Image (cartoon, rainbow, N blue to C red; front, side, top):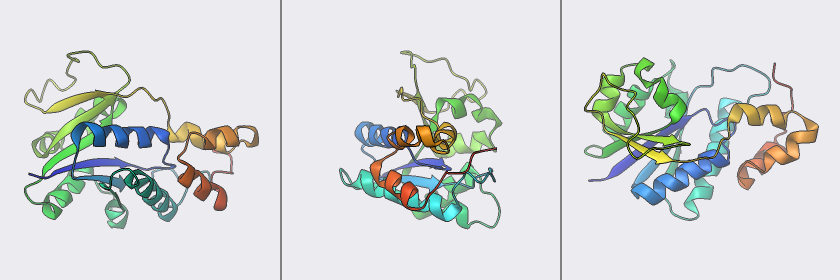
Length: 203
C-alpha cells in the first residue's frame, strides 16, 4: 500500500521550519509522496506574495527537498478551485488521485488544538492519520480530541519556532531582512530577492 502525506499551508514564504518538517516526515515515514498543497491566503496586505509567487516558492522548496530524496510535489489544486477549499476536499481529491493509498495529514500543534473546529473533522479522521508536529511531546500526550476516541494521531517532536507571519515582518525591515533571509531555504531566499518580495511594511 502506498502512503501519501498532505502538508498544506499558505507558504508565504516557505521557511526552514517547513523544510525541517518535510525532512523529518520523509525520515520517519518513508512515504511514497508528500504533497505540499498551497492554500488560499486570507491576507490581502501588500507584504504578502501572490498565489503564483507562493506556488513558485513552494515548487522551489520541493525541488530543494528532492535533491536528497524525490518524494515531494508542490500542488496548486486548492488555488485552482473556484471557491475556497477545505482540507477534507483536498483529501478527497488525493483519494481519487491515489486510490487505495494510506493518507496522512501533517499539521502543527497550533492547528491540532483547534482541529475540532475544522470543517468535518470526523470525516477527515476517517480518511487520514494525523501527524502532529509539536515542540514538546510527552510519551503519551493528552488527547485534545475526546469526541473522536478512535482517531489515529501520531505526535512528532519538532522544536523550530518559525512562522511566516513573523518572517514577513522581519523581511519588511531593512535592518532585519538579511537575518530573516537566513531562516529561509537559499533557493527560496534568492527568489524573494529577485522579485523584491515582502518589502512593504505589513499593516
